[in-house]
Length: 307
Length: 329
Image (cartoon, rainbow over all chains, first blue to last red; front, side):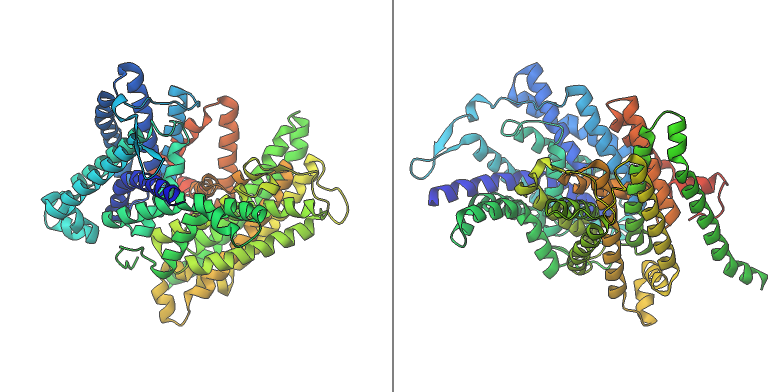
């Protein structure tokens, strides 16, 4: 039982780290620009597909991963230049309309280019083994590597935001956009940078998850909504909040699906417990989010905003 | 002085103009079935029925989004609640439309009252996201509800009856029943938005602080509007289930909620006629493009992006800029 718990805890952390990679860029876009971007999940999907395509042509995992970064960065820059830039001053509704349209366009383009069938990506040789966990259980090295990489990215993001000049401007921009602009910083260039970096992180997440999950046109949708949950629980605009909330959501979701039915079984008869467990488990993270917003309407690390 | 009288008279004239437009729309819709039969395209009746169902849904969302400035991203939940009310009741042997409507509205009112009271504690982006979360909760509840087909949904044995009569069986009966409910919902919301309640709601949209200053607490008004909108949207859900003779959790996915917002923004937010027009145009675009190509979503998405970038205010904004309609906000 303890082994199973540890195993699921690691799975939860791995999922949480992934959510963080996608959420980090989006929470800054939300927080600094007050911009609703439904198309962020699509960038995650594009990362997965570019990875699958590069693996198909080069066959080299590391080379493909290295190529995903500039490609998704470029996609982010193009989208920012063509669409998002014109929408920063508009209402949330116009932003929802445009980015919802982009989701449709990009998902359909992916279907046209690669078809609807899921693609799979081979794991690199060096990470394909498993290491012994407590007792007879083993844990795949690749998943551990994902956790490690995610923590590394989180650390470097923390360093950039807390210790560098760009990070200082970011924090200032999140607090008061017009003041930063008035003090002589080109806020549009800052936006573009944040947006492109966020796109690259999301694409990177899509690429590193592709050997674990398959790459399919629906992958962006499913992660997008959970990313919103993460951002809102953590507090819009807070990368630290996104990190804590991502791990929380990842672990609650994974453990809930595994142990929810087991816990319920001790309370009611097995058949009812199985049904109730199946029903409640996928709702758990949304219940968590509603509860957090009930007690802290601006999220765990959010500033109280008067909008 | 004349300026003042003109300013005072204008809203009334504007409203009358919009009402005329809506009445024209209803008149055109009423002759769709005979025309479709004459043209040998009875399929158009089914399409028009779907359009009207979504027009009801869009109208209900417009009350909170357009008049109350509450951007709900979980409105499709009520579509699903209405549809599942039909599925559950017909399984229990109750297939009367009136009873199903009442049950759907009661369930939706309860869900809206609870989730609305919690959601209204938040503002802006947080409100959008918490309504999305409640919508997803409802979605996953029915996805894992295996006795009702779970993810695959469930086919209904037959359409509902009205006071024991199988009025909805044919495409025409379904069409006119939907039209009647659409007109009723429109009339109700038209009265409501002009009433004292509607004025307070609109005032809260413009400035909650000023409304508080003149002695209105926004919360009860906003929550009431939220509950009414949920109830009315469940009517669309009941009709959707009957039209398709099939119910599935896909009705309440976040894509549907997004699509409803798209309808409103396309038609012009805060105008009942605009909401209906937006729903009609959206479904027409989807159906039309789907006939043209399997990859219709590409074209539809491009249209949405283009409207957002180049035509603020949606259709009403476009008409106004072309000078076809004066002041059609």
